[in-house]
Image (cartoon, rainbow, N blue to C red; front, top):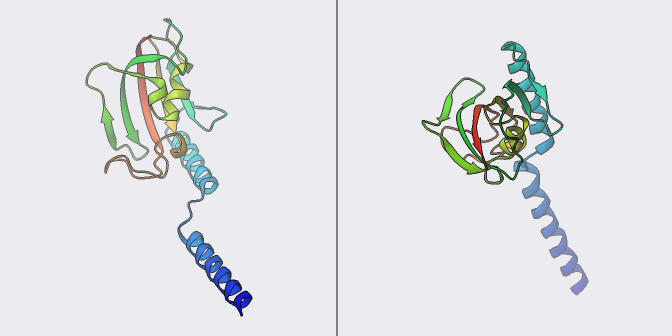
Length: 156
């Protein structure tokens, strides 16, 4: 009888666990595919000569810059505009903003070092390199592809 009771408890636990995982499980690979398709559609429709980075980030170097090079470990001063792919602006700096590239979303950490100080870059960031399956504010829905134009003004 004890064996039957244990077996019943194990089967019940297994059913509960499997049942709870199947409905709301986030599929990262599917989201990456959806993001890439949306980005390709966006850059095609808007005739943006973007390059795809090995991480899935798309970028357009508008001005390469002639100043100092930066790395992902640099602290940078930038001005920027952030939009969703539908053109909705969710953020814009009004003066130079300074922060370490290790403290921002991965898309910036990867993309900003592609230019030098004095440069301007457009980063079209898939959700997994942005805020992912989280919503940092009501103006940025979860799983959003982000479109940033960034001027790299200074570096340390």
